[in-house]
Each structure stands twice: as C-alpha cells, then as structure tokens.
Amino acid sequence: MKSYGFDPYWGHLFVFLAKRRNRAKSLCWHPGDFVLWYKRIARGRFRRTPRVSDGDTLQIDSTELTLLLDGIDLRGVRRARMWEPKKSA
Image (cartoon, rainbow, N blue to C red; front, side, top):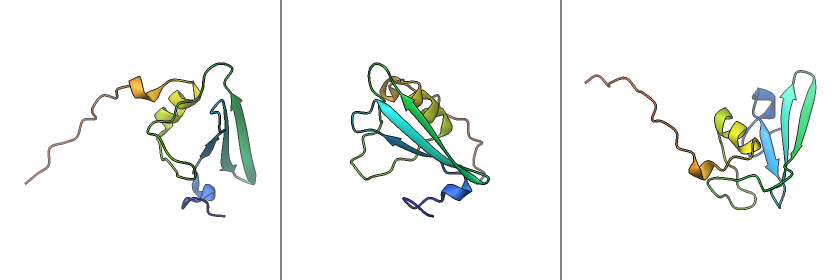
C-alpha cells in the first residue's frame, strides 16, 4: 500500500485534519497491524502552516506535529537556526 508517494510500512505517519480542523486522525503501521489515533480539540482549531489546498500533502517533522496536535499556532513559533559545520574548500 503506497499513499501520497509515501509508504506507511516504512514508518511514515499520516495525519488527516477534518474540514473544520477541530479533529485529527493519525494512521501508522505497527508491526502486525495499523494503529489509528483520534484527537478532537474542544476549542479552536488545529492550525496548518503553510496552507495547503485540498488533496495536497505537507511533510513536517515530529516537533511541528507535536505543536500542531497541542493546538499551537505554528505561525507565531520561531525555530532557532541550526548549527552547521563550516564547509571545507
């Protein structure tokens, strides 16, 4: 089963937001079967940043997913610049 160009058997986590963005469903593969999580936010909405149109995909890291599912608006969050070693000539 391949969906959206990603393979759930290789550890990809799929998160689907409801149209009103007050509910989220997450689907992932656990050895032997699929696991489905459901979360409903009581007030407000889950914020998607950047905006994506219906049917498009957005790839985010685990930190952004945690903030999204905690109901934090990612537009106001600034991530510190990551250190990178100097490139040799």
